[in-house]
Length: 197
Image 1 (cartoon, rainbow, N blue to C red):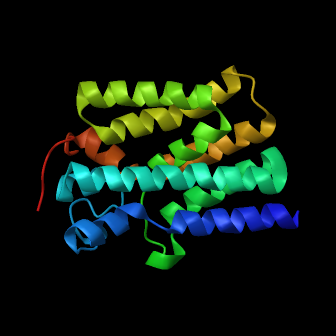
Image 2: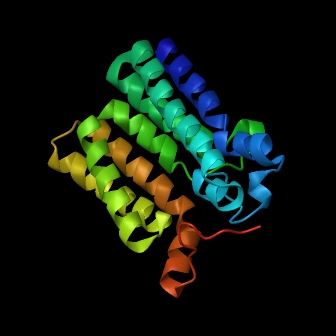
């Protein structure tokens, strides 16, 4: 149990290293949370600082999800991996290093899921990319993926722990996207490629 706790704590600390925030500092000398949508995520980085900075942010936030799950699994098997995945997303969303004001956790969730269940991860990525390509709404792709994730976990006959995890992760994503959901319903959501600042 001590190893699992250690893996989860390390996962949270990894999550708290927000690469979108770092990209803002490195590429623009700004706090990305004070610009655009105010979200410390790759989409907002792309909107404010361009594709190169966004790719940097995306890669960092994805890889910390991968790393956290790998550490958690090494520390405590499947349960350790799942708890570390929850922890790394919590760290991204509510980072101790940034006053608990982080991003929405989608990229980090994808990184974690790539290690937990590659099949489901690839399906969700495919659906998300298709929706984004057709609608130009990144948030819609993320929201759809969040809703679809627990359904796929059940359909694939995953463990009870994975079902609970999928519901927790989906809830995190939907709560963090509540503003986007309201803007989508009002027709006011910004599309991918729209520049600000």
